[in-house]
Amino acid sequence: MSEHKGIWVIAETDSNNKIIGVTLELINAAKELSSQLGGEEVGTLLMTGNENIEDSIRTISEAGSDKIYLIKDASLGQYSTELYTDAVSQAIEQKKPSIILVGATTTGRDFAPRVAARLRTGLTADCTSLNINEQGLFAATRPTFGGNLMATILCKVTRPQMATIRPKVLPKPEMNSTNNAEVEQINVNLDISRIKTKLLECTGVCQNNVQKIEEADIIIAGGRGMKSAEGFKILEDLARSLGGAVGASRACVDAGWRSHSDQVGQTGKTVCPKVYIACGISGAIQHLAGMSSSDIIIAINKDSEAPIFGVATYGIVGDVFEIVPAITEAIKAEQLTTVCSF
Image (cartoon, rainbow, N blue to C red; front, top):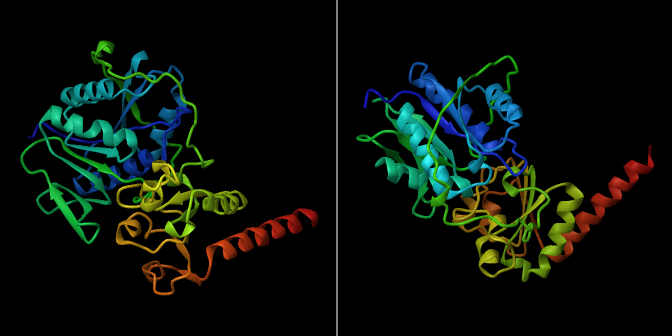
């Protein structure tokens, strides 16, 4: 295992080919792990089918990566489970990093376990913290038993040591424009005949939020107390007035009121906004696991004994269908007053 050296982050881009937030969070985490290991190289693997990659390279470099390993292939223009698995596996086999960090996004959760199986190594999924233990092993910690316990998992025998990490649970780095990461291109063999599914069209259906909840600074989330999909309209109005996004508990998603992309909690997304407004959410431990690290939590619920008040910064006992519209109107009135004063 001594031949395996270095810490890799698998970069991910959005639909506009911009590096997403969790990639930056992982580069920052990799730098911390590197310092604990005596300064091992922090590398970022960037896979792309696009020619214009200067912005991505600059962002990764400014985040603090020592080296950027680049795979350019036209077939990687759109995500493919098979091709990403092939590309990542071949790159790891060539360069032999010791630790691999992947964002626990829809994409990361799809290809990371396949890569681990291909390389016959272990993978710790949905981690919330990372460390190096006294023996120099990568120690990945994740919630277990419904969030009641935290398990720290080691991969003692095989390499690389792999983990997927939830977005928004780790801090982003301070960007440094003077950092100049070395770029090295990696050649891989990709067979497009292996692709089993093909994206024909992206219609934007179910895209209720202007921004993704995992990227939002303000989230207004609804629970079973919203009573129906129609009930979420008052949360959407509040979100628009605040420039935020709308989230939901698992019960609402299971009921078909909201898309799974809006779900906050252990089986949904982990978020860490500046303000989280929980409306009609009781506060089951599975939901708290996905939002309890928010800077400010405001709970609105008719039940004064609801567990959500136990983690709330501020609590309002009352009917969400009366309170939320009143807050929205007050915000709009304040905005109008501000505009008229100029």
